[in-house]
Length: 396
Image (tube, rainbow, N blue to C red):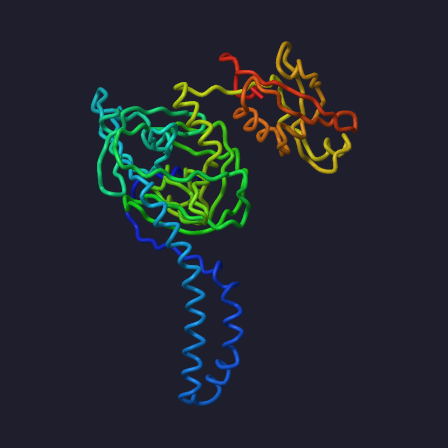
């Protein structure tokens, strides 16, 4: 079951220090000390042997400390940029023969960014959803409390941005989530169970996780391209940053997969490139404009059909209909084409194409590669803004 990482429930947990990072580099010292160890544990040690063993141990610890300092430095750089968020919401409930309201307290995390010399907090929409400005409290690393002066949010991606009016803020350094690879070491910072500025450590376990049912708080997020991590993400981590070892934000932690509601080693983060694209539109225009290609896609495109068409395996998105007077029609995309690339990005499946198109820049030419009649055909398309009356599945 997928849970958003916000509701609070107290438990005890500890963050691992990622010893896998250290083992390989300390290997040389281990080898040098091996002969001394073997003699030490098979015969009685002399004073000289003990001193040699202490010296070998010291060299190993020095190597260990040098690498552990990477994590310490990352945490020092990131901590001033992470905030704890509390939001009070009023929920309508059945009460006797009528209806009443109850106060619901939501807790989460956020990260400070700077755009055009102004400071903002990135977080998840579900953390502050339905809360009034005066009922949102942001606690900074230095314990200062402030309410946002303005809030924007996008339901389809579960991203929210809050504008701050507070001096002497420290903004996070933004990385490039397109460069993230499976196996990269990462650090998650947030406020699980209200324990602010907690740090956990792990790796990127997978990329491109889509079609996740996030359950409550607005249901399914339409546009998904989650990174999966085994860094411990617990209730209260929602909206907090996922950091690489360069101290750069590469994602915003959003949800966990769990049977118990607590961390089980499967967490999901929104790639920061997606987050920043949404944030800039929200700040500049107050809303998000989705791009539009104008095709309907084959959701049942199968390996058997891919083989029949001559593809080496199932990949790409198969077009079943091209809308009249659409960008796709103008680019001469045809029914039966399999869209293999868009804007230089290899397309994995129809859902992947939906995400790519949704965040594409409008009114800009983009290269497209389609597979047609056993050959690759290069086209150019200029996507437009999605008409308001179109459904998500028709917006590709």
